[in-house]
Image (cartoon, rainbow, N blue to C red; front, side, top):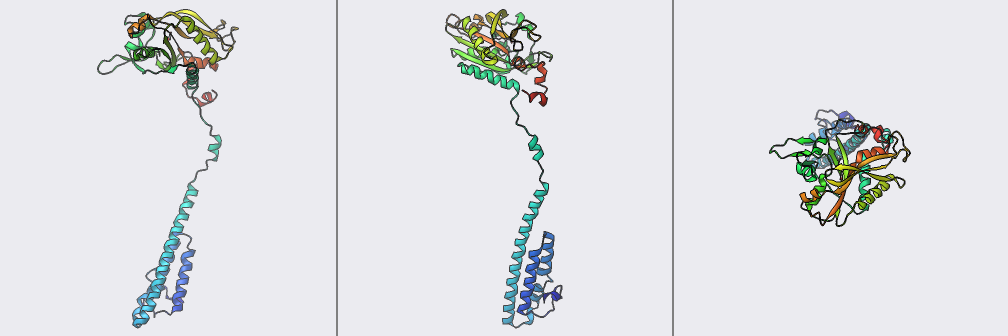
Length: 358
Ligand code: DAH
C-alpha cells in the first residue's frame, strides 16, 4: 500500500492502479478528518507534499514506456487535482468554523445589562417647556426664538431701558468680549424676542418664546446662573388688559389644573405699562397657607403688563393702531413648584436617582 512509500526516496517503482486509488482514498480520509487548520496542513503535507506517494510516483514515471507513462500520469494528475481542491474546500470549512468559534468565545453576555436597562426620558425642565408650548400652540400662538448671544439694543435699549436706566443694574449680565467691539451679552431675559418679533414687521403677533437666559447669580436653592424663561407676546388691534388677565388664567388652569386660580398685583417693568406680577394659588396647600407659600396661599410666578408705547416706537410700530400685552416667567421655577422640588440645583446636578423620578 501507499504507507511504505510515504517519505520515499523517489526511486520507487511506478504504481499499479490499485495502489494509486488506495493512496488517494487514504489522502481523502486524512484531509476530511482534519479537525483544525494545523491538522489539515499536516495531512496535506503527508499526502500531497513532495515526499507523498502521489508525488514520488510522479517522479518515477520515466521508467514506463510512453503509453503507460501517459496513462498513469493522467491518473496521478487527476487524483492530485481532486485532492488539492478537497484540501482547499476543507480549509475554507475549517476557517469558517474557527471564526464562528472565535465569535462565540468573544461574545459578551449582555443579559444582565439589558435586564437593568431602562428607557430614558426628557429632562423635567424640557417636559414642562414642551407642555407650555402645547398649551399656547393650542391657543393659536406660534413658537418664536431669538439668539442667546443678544445685542444690547434687543436685550435692553429697545425694551425701554436706555444706558442709564436703573433697571439695568438690577440685572447683572454676562457681557461678551468680542473682537470688533460689537456689544453682545448673554441675554438676561427672553423679552428681547418681543423686539425681534416687532422688528419682523408681521402683525398681529401671537407668540411664545421659551429659552435659556443668563444672569450673574450664584446658584442656590432658588437661583441658577443659567435658567429658562418663557415669554408671551401678543400684539393686535384693540388688545386690552382684560385679554391679558384671561390669557394668564387660562394657561395657569391648563398647566396646574382647573382648581388653580391666578391674580395680578401691581409691579414695575420698564417695557410694560401698566405692569403686574401674577401669582397662582399655592400648589402645595391649594391656597390655605403653608410653609412653601409663606402662609399667604399665593405663589408669584412671573411678570406681565401692557406693551409700553416706547417699545412700539423703538421698533417702528404705531402705538395708536396697535396694542398688546406681554408676560414672562421662569420655566425651572414652574417645574420646581409642580414637582415640589426644594432646590433648583438638583435640576442640573445630573443625579439620575433624582431625574428618574420626574
Ligand atoms: N423679563 C422679565 C424678567 O426677566 C419678566 C417679564 C416681566 C416679562 C414682565 C414680561 C413682562 O414680558 O411683561 O424679569
